[in-house]
Image (cartoon, one colour):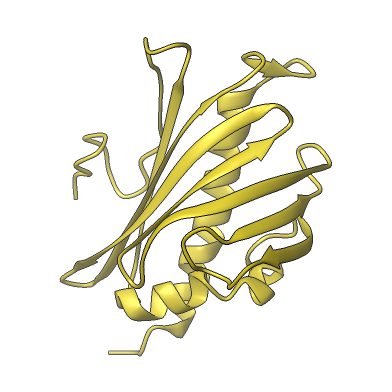
Length: 167
């Protein structure tokens, strides 16, 4: 199956340097057997994110969780210990969500889209970021982000597949 974002297969990472003011774009796509409503429920169950990723510490909301304008602060342990401050900018339950992240001097816009397909859900995410430089402690930022997206969304896909009804 070809992915429309990148023209690649079932798990299609993509990174491109954008000519607009040093903005870098990273994309990732996974497919799950779960229907969009089930995938959305798992995605928004932030109290159980530790099941999806061992990168997280404390998670704290300001405002109503998953509402436009609400904020979530997420402590991450790797690749660097930091706190991500995220504000929800768009939310269409079961369909898409977008936010702006601020972490370590970088600003990132990220979208996650849940698209029904004949055998489950296609979940695509992309983010664009800009910040103080292309590396942190000698590691390329876009590679760290791609690694995170691959790890997190593959674990998320597995959780969704476990929750999908058997056929």
